[in-house]
Length: 260
Image 1 (tube, helix red, strand yellow):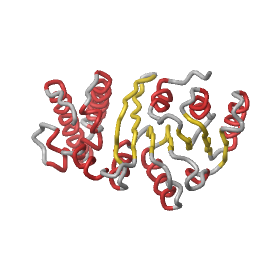
Image 2: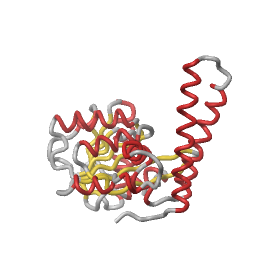
Image 3: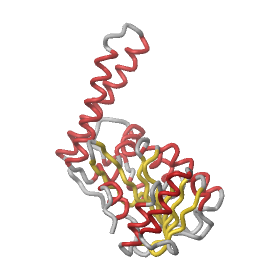
Image 4: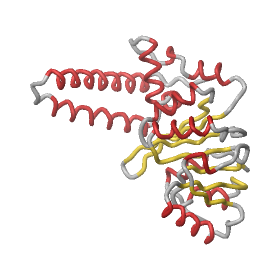
């Protein structure tokens, strides 16, 4: 059986049992092979745009003896699946803007027909993915934060449910954050930092955002050596963001309410 990285293992753990999965941008096909080997999935599509990784996925699938149960297909985004063919889509390792675009294009083409679960791991722009889910009527059911090789990865589980709008309204309720900020800013923070991650604070979450604040401080220090008005304005914006991060982390240490 394949051994996955912690990141891919976390993604696999959010795929519902006996799903028919489309792994978009599958690279070497590790995730679909693992899902079939563990019995978590009954059928999978490994979609890949580039020929090199696609052939690597084909070899991986053949070596695992899963040729008849995993279809390796070349294509852009969700173009590799037919409407109703799968009920779960996984997309990992790309930017949030690209991920949202793939989902939008797939939805417009009817490729999300029959899909009830999305497991998404954007490398950057996580807020863009959360915003897309919110706008398109998906409910963000869970979030995981994984630290691996000095990097942090957020994994988002979204589902189709009848009362998604009401549940999302509760999830992104700005009153959850006890900060002296207006409601719009609090919602921005929930989208930016993750509503479930903030409701279930961990040491990994704190390390991630302390690291982000440290990066901003270093940038501010460099900008402080510039005489331009533009640099001064950007420095002030970053200083405000650092202050906000510190406030959020401070309230998480003292206010560990769970969502219900």
